[in-house]
Image (cartoon, rainbow, N blue to C red; front, side, top):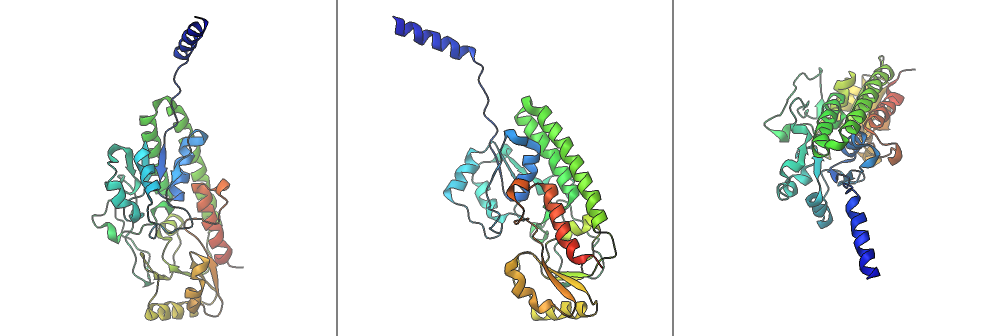
Length: 305
């Protein structure tokens, strides 16, 4: 009888304790998007990232464990099929539906067309929004400050819809993020004020960043998912650099240094600038830290004496 009474008392106690809702299970595609989501969720939710920073989004192959993460997610936030193509088909098979937030498809998102390899000439003026041919879109859209601002607001709205009890937290985090982003933009513009040395890129990865901070590259050896440059393109860029004197050549990883070496002429400096910020300490990785890191790496080469 005593045992039955204790069980009854425990049941009454358990019934009196309100159920604690579990944190939302949020999955993202790449590190910059995870950092953006984490800026809005705060410390209570830790978004899980699918594509490790050490792997190119174009080379990533999903494993069964990744498919389980997608199936179990309350919310999947990704750039879209032309930025992280490895996820396009798997997501179509997971019945993601309303659990999916595709950032590059949000109205107002800045999408720029791929540039042709070689000399760019004048600043491109074409802006494509919700382009009908995504295969021609520059995939590095997370480097546009205006996109980060737009996406942060959309992420906060979606989180609040799924978890209205924490709406105040999401909105407060959003406000803080927008403030930090605004300050980072002002600081970077100051850091990258002219005069600056001319520069080329081995792989064209920073078009969105350039537009946001008024930088004008001479050109790039490869664009899109291309990994090797034609001899004619290399010669044309090298001749342009030779006419500039002191100049910078940017590569996105140390592994590309040897491929970019033929671009070097007298006075040209080779520097590594990673659009994913893979050398940022994970504890310090935020969207604004990524923008500042890129700006710092560029400025260390571009600033004239």
